[in-house]
Length: 213
Image (cartoon, rainbow, N blue to C red; front, side, top):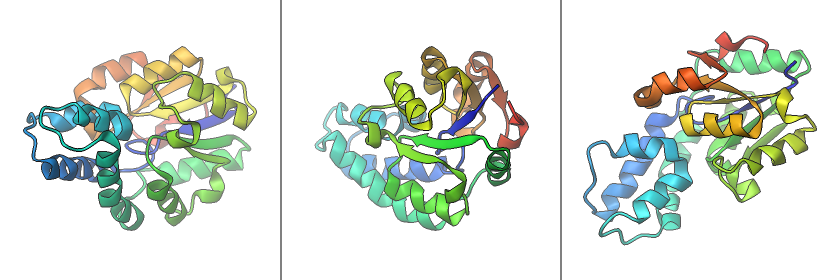
C-alpha cells in the first residue's frame, strides 16, 4: 500500500510550463545567440538547472548557467506568485490524501522563491509534510540518491511512495530508485507522451484520476 505521495511542481501540480518557457526564452533572447525553433522542446525535460547548463554551451553564449538561471527566476517569480494556477483537481486531490492520513511532499527543480508563495496562495501549504527543491539536496532529480534523501525525511520506505511527474526522464529515474512512478499529462510533454504512458507504472490525464494508489 502507498503511504506517501510526492509531487513534482511545474507541469504536475502547477499549470506553469508556459510561464517557465517564457522565462527561458527571455534569457535566450537577452543572450543574443541563435537557437533552433524547437529549443523549448529541447529544454523542457531538462528543467531549470539542466536547461541553463544546455544554454551555457551554445555557441556564442556569454552568460554562465547560473546567470541564465537567475534571469529565468527573476522573470518567472512574480508571475508564479501572482498568476500561476494549480492544474485541474490538484487542490482537491492533495487535500483528500491528507484527510486519509497519507504523507505528502513536493520535490521540484524550481526555486523556493517561485513555488512556496504559489502553494500558499492555493491554500495547500499545510497539506504538505515537506516542500523541497533540488537546491535543498544539492542534486538534481536525475540523481537517484535524491529519492533516498526525501524518503528518509518522510520516514517511508521507497517502495511505499508514489512519485508524480510529467517528465519522462524523471519517471525513469524514479523507477530506478524503487518508487512507484505516476506519469502526469502536460501539454508541454506531448512530444514524448507515448513513452511516458508506456514507461510509468500509472499514467493520468489529471490528478484526480489517480485515486488512492
